Amino acid sequence: MGTIKDYKYKLIKNFLTPEEVKLGAHYFKLLHKRNKTQFDDAQSNNLDSRFYSDALTDSLLINKKNILEKETGLELYPTYSFSRIYTYNSELVKHTDRPSCEISITIMWDSDGTEWPIYMDGNPIELKPGDGAAYLGCDVEHYRNNFKGDYHIQSFLHYVNKNGKYQEYKYDKKSIRENAQAKW
Image (cartoon, rainbow, N blue to C red):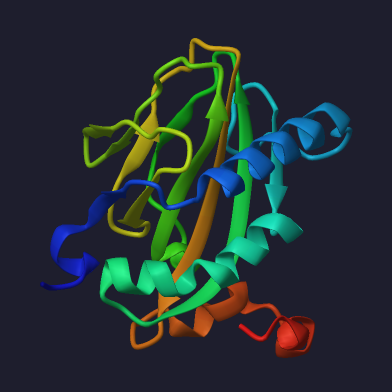
């Protein structure tokens, strides 16, 4: 069967349950409406809301690890989660990720219905609510063209291979004490 190292990226339909999608979509819409300080000026051209290691998505990072290990064929350490609410004319510039994102999955929560594929090595992947695209973040160039809709909610769960060259990036190099209660 092989591992994700053999195919580099893959679509995972229904990575989230319908109940998780409903909860997450409402949660992020409320978070976005209440946001006063967390804007993405590093990766976004229009200061979209962004949330690093939010409690909800860190919970998913832990609870979905076994599914992602099965899908990728690798044993994983969690590193961090990241979410973004994209708005009109947002763009995700072509890039590869830092070592903490060796194995990643981007998850679609909700949108206004405007199709907006993510490109992996130049190939479009269209995600529906609850779908995820797992990929080698450090190796696969990924991006999105300018968004022409009103909103699009996306989360990223990042991991490293327990037996790989980036294993020291587990927990995004946060202290073990900070993560001791999480029971990763």
